[in-house]
Image (cartoon, rainbow, N blue to C red):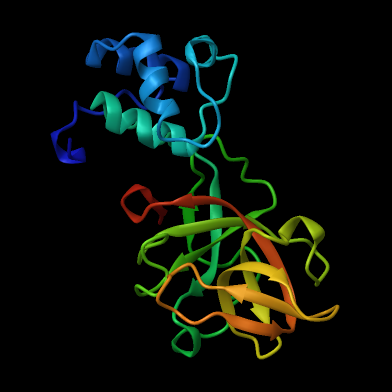
Amino acid sequence: MLFGEMHARTPISTPLNEWLIEALAHSGLSQTALAERLDARVPKKIDRSIINKMTLGKRVISAEEMLLISEITGFALPSGKPDQPSISIAGQVGAGAKVPVFDAYEKGDGPQVECPPGLSPHGIVAVEVVGDSMEPVYSAGDLLFYTRDTHDGVPEEAIGHRCVCEDEAGMGWVKQVKRGSEPGLFNLVSLNPGADNMHDVRLKWAARVRLHWPAELVRKVS
């Protein structure tokens, strides 16, 4: 079902657990049925007990889970609150040299977007995807949220994962980071299977992508 065909938005004051209860009522699905459909589309195990905890407010509903629940039930995502916390966009990432260094703004001075549900705004920044070089994983206009350590370098937790990173030339990339042929060098694996990988690259820093937020869900703060 398309987003435009969904039920009218829930009130902006609706807590997420109440939103889930309303979504279940709107769809006629049981907690078990929703758990089965959600479990088939997420990497982590979802069963009825987890859905029950969500409805009781005892378990956080992640942004990805909210999007899927909205699609499964046909019930619109809740509107943001007037005091919704915001996150800064640090810049843009895309097809190599076509995109400049992405730390284009002074800290905190970039465009602001509403913080996605289930994500803490503290210490988080985002970059906007430009072009189609990361299809089918990420699309133009999508936001990637990450936590950047105050120190440069590539932390151990980044190895083997999709990361926002900057090379020695000051170019921003979103790649899977793997160890290179010697310490200090890294192989950058492209998300697009048709694109070339980069080998033995020196990086200023790398930060693991914490959340991917599709363009249609982004709400910019004026």
